[in-house]
Length: 325
Image 1 (cartoon, helix red, strand yellow):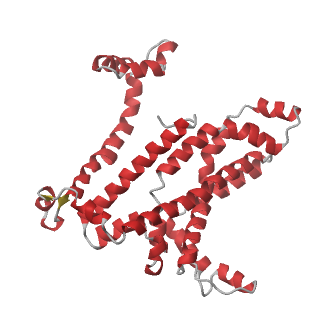
Image 2 (cartoon, one colour):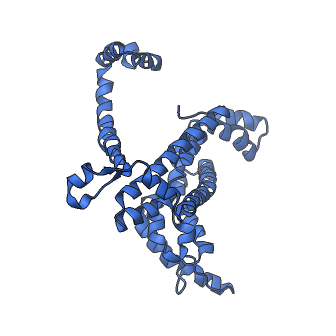
Image 3 (cartoon, helix red, strand yellow):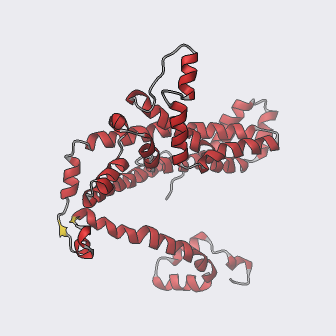
């Protein structure tokens, strides 16, 4: 670290300029070596666990046989885009892609606004102790595994002795098969997802709300603004950048509809409305042992996710909102 204050933290412009040539980058590393050492564990993590496994993508273009050893994997026959063509022509292609986007879209539609609303409500609580209790209770479901959540869902929505069906019957209705009827299965998926993740999603929004200048609210109160007007005129515009970035992340994650949740809750009778790309890859790759084909389907999914992130970032820029780059 440098001894003078003005060289301890490298300006962003200086770092950007330093990457333009190897010589400038070397000088920047010597000058700010302490910060580069701090970056090293993160870079190694990305290299070992994120980038090196990407070499496995190659099996999507090979016909491999892992049961005869490394020779069957490394010496696999090159088949080009044959697995992709097989997937695009598959009977399941349209259904699993549609299910993936429908389930993800429903989760985003219901969880994203409710997360913002919950954060705004928590932020308005005056009693600090009660506020912390509410935050803790809302965070807890995030730490419960999907295995436990699926067990709770089976007990809650069971046709024979489930609490929900007992309540429906008590109100004069008929028992419903929430987990075995395609008409209700997606509702269970969305409800359990919102319950599990809504509290955890408020953390970043509450952090952003803490940074809003209190003088803005004082001025608004003097001008006679009520709570709703303060929320729509001050709070939401002040955290618009954070909401924009979170929305981009969520849109980029639309292709992930929740593998663990669906795998634990679904059954063949609801495949038509619940079978997604991830569960299809699981069945083809680990149950049918079609590793190359499953890898090709997963590569397709990754490409779609990349395009969605780029598209969402481009749209945010066009709407004059903050983007990821």
